[in-house]
Image (cartoon, rainbow, N blue to C red; front, top):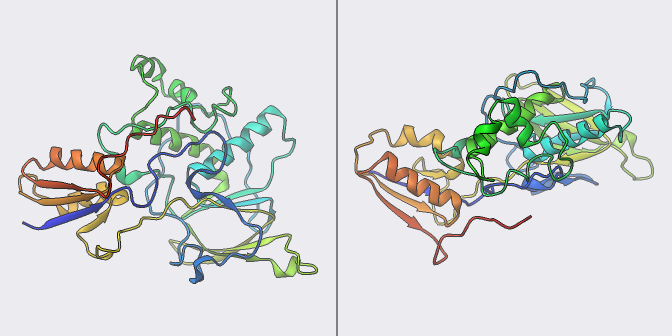
Length: 322
């Protein structure tokens, strides 16, 4: 029978702390020209942000975001490249500041995301998979527990607060937490351009005086139509998340070498006979590797599966207080 190799936990992190800040998943602020990795695109491959999964439904009766859509030709106060948990945390923090009155005027903010809709670890939403971190480290609680965007308020909005409380756990299912993130993201559709691939970020030479850059130009392209557009911004935030990485010893373009981030998308297409004695190697020692190893045994009981790791044992979950 054919063999299959999964590279697990070699690239995007498992769970990110999202307590209203914007440092999760590799966020960073540009303060100069940026054609990183020498490929004419910020991730060296003509693409700056992730895959393509439709956006989830938001809760009923939700409050509208206090962020308002701006004209494409406006000078934006902030353009965020990528709309994952880090950028979403920024959107929530801005909304909460406007709601509390600590920010008097809504800034002109735009989020650019290549995916067709919000998605978080869509390829690893396995049955029974749980978060590694407490739900208290959500988009808002540690910054403002009264925010409308806490995980507990999401549960209340969905009518699941009592049921979740009865579970007596701080670790929600990963699928439910992803739905919480989708629910939160759905409030900000007016300021997000999904299906938009960012090609480059550079100096706005027309606005530069004496060699000092006050504004940036963000070049983008529509995934669907191929049309290009350039946005101007005073500040640019890169929040593109982790990039999948295959160990050099494995062929990177072999259809039977699959990164864990694509596990649920590709496995049914490759291993289509649940009774076959497949041979599967899972490379990695983190949560993703353990979950895939267990899931393979469940889905394909006749398979022979190996867990290959550099260390002597699996890495424990991160249960530190912060």
